[in-house]
Amino acid sequence: MPYLDFRVSAKPSQQQAERVAGILTELTATVLGKKPELTSVSIHAMEAGHWYIGGNSLASQSLVTFYLDIKVTEGTNTKNEKAEYVRRVFAAVADIFGALAPASYVVIDEVHADAWGYQGQTQEYRYIRGKPL
Image (cartoon, rainbow, N blue to C red; front, side, top):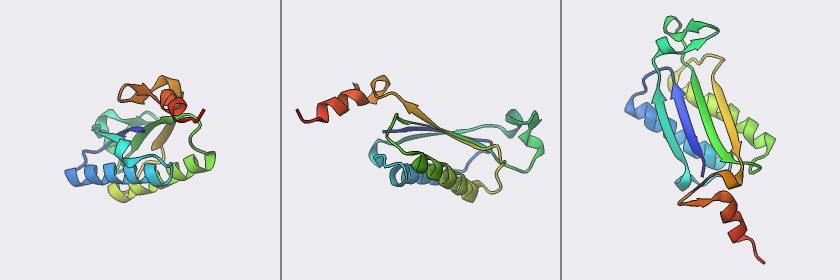
């Protein structure tokens, strides 16, 4: 399970939104080792006139920017995996939307296993339940 909140300074077409969701799910599975069937992606379009970098509105620029906030269980990925994920997400988003502002961000939030879960059970509980005695 991870949860991905993707924000972009452009209004994606349905095809672009599906590509974003698909590639983020695929990279989250292949690079970070998360289960695709438990990966949740939300996509939010932001008006370029309401997004600022360096105090300047993106409406006056020909660049797109994005912000991806992904939540994963703390300690389940290495530094190398996270670095590769950031690199590959940036490249994939650029492939979908074109030229990106350098200030486009991927934030990997590592959440304590006892602080989140799904189907009413925390990740910590799942871990303990799966440990042999």
